[in-house]
Length: 100
Image (tube, rainbow, N blue to C red; front, side, top):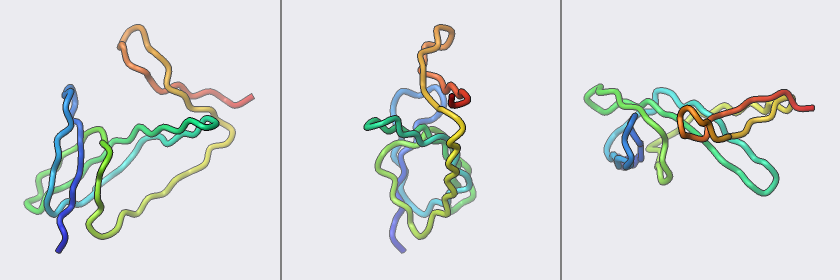
């Protein structure tokens, strides 16, 4: 069976961890947005190893699915999603507004 390769950035970590082996996606959530020519995603994933260990974090580029990933995307055209600087956290945080 082909190996799976995944990149996750664990909570509080600055570097991405590369994981390989038989991994199963347990959940995947976040946002995928397109603002004109600019697109972005912010996804979190929980996965399990062949021994049942569960790991989760921010999804990094370069993930390879071993067999199938069942992904449901919902278009929310009445809403506008953006990432904006937050003075308290120092991060670009998700902001959701009703589209005018």
